[in-house]
Length: 281
Ligand SMILES: NC(=O)c1ccc[n+]([C@@H]2O[C@H](COP(=O)([O-])OP(=O)(O)OC[C@H]3O[C@@H](n4cnc5c(N)ncnc54)[C@H](O)[C@@H]3O)[C@@H](O)[C@H]2O)c1
Image 1 (cartoon, protein in one colour):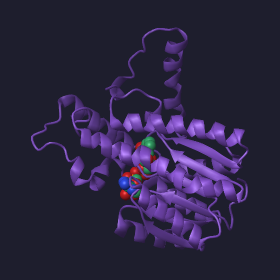
Image 2 (cartoon, helix red, strand yellow; image 1 turned 120 degrees about the vertical axis):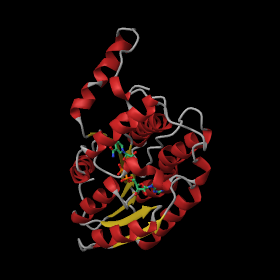
Image 3 (cartoon, helix red, strand yellow; image 1 turned 90 degrees about the vertical axis):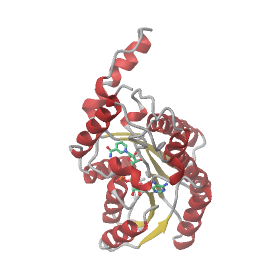
Image 4 (cartoon, helix red, strand yellow; image 1 turned 180 degrees about the vertical axis):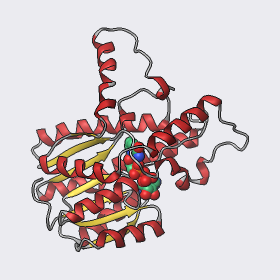
């Protein structure tokens, strides 16, 4: 989508981290922006920041896990602006440190936000984008969407890669004019490690649960990697360029991408996969 100026972007999870950086980047490119998030005070602050670029920016409290809430976001976006040209399905939660394989509520929370959030975004926005003649959708997956891991986060991100690829082919085949990108970041310096701030009561870990040494080590490793990750503004530049050039894959860490070679080799050679080290679970 080469023309951005004067057009409209809708971004979920826009109060913090990458979503906020996308909002700033697309406003800088002259787009009007609908910023949505579940966290109200932070969203208000982020809207004020992004509005300083001079385009029209509005905020809408949205829980992406709730289909009706995403429908309201779409209604408001199309009502306030003539059309929606870019949708970034970006809101997400990490879901740890918690007993990922014994707590069903935790599985549901992470899948509801990370996977159903994307599905609701497609359902609520795509038909009207197709009707208006095109646009672009960016789905945020992760390198966790390519690497092994027995966790709801991994399950959600693999699913986002799969449905994004399927949607890409469908949009091409049907010549809808809607481009699709799948963002698969490595580590990025955001608040993702504090996702528990949005954890619903229903997904609380059992009171007596004590994380294993292995879980604690994995958590510490993740915290350090995220703290040392790429700045969100750099990822926003990559996303901006991928939208303009209509590119599907957006990777932020090419060294991590190289580790995927082993997986493909094991498939081609029909042998068991080798260990991926600290990210194995
Ligand atoms: N930071 C990383 O290292 C990294 C790596 C790979 C993928 N990701 C993905 O990037 C995306 C953005 O996360 P981030 O790293 O910027 O983290 P972040 O915590 O800084 O931002 C995530 C935003 O999503 C919002 N959110 C959470 N639950 C929500 C819900 N139910 N409805 C609406 N909004 C909700 C949060 O309030 C927050 O503003 C996520 O999908 C995440 O899984 C992050």
